[in-house]
Image (cartoon, rainbow, N blue to C red; front, side, top):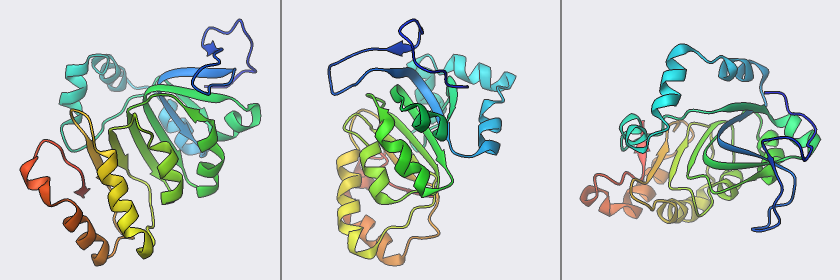
Length: 210
């Protein structure tokens, strides 16, 4: 999706002054944002199966079935480029699902200030730092999948474990970390000690090792 310069006549551009939202901003239920041209082309290729998937995702019961209790299987209505958003200084208001695929941590650094909204589902790919994850995981987010490569400094293990606890709330919370090549045995021990109650709440998966 090519971003146009904002104008009041544009149907998908809103103007609000509440909740620290500054005009103008683009309004999406589900959006995919990337800094990579190949990923942009892949995500923009809407197949027949993906269209069926999007149709089913409109209904809450199908979202639960398609996600299960251990993951998030997202859809998106638009694909945007990081550079386009930053260049035009457009805030992106997301209502439901935010998918970010940034190969560079610098791109995450650039795009984070432009993301707003009460989205509850967050999927991250590429390379990200724990400091960039934190502002994206707002109070409204209860389902997170980190498929990005993420290094966690040992001195931050306690803080990150507590962050995961605070972030898992709602009816079907999920905090899935799909890539673990950077994690140490010490981090695994910290997670195990932090989540002793996971055995008693099988429908509230707080941490998953793939």
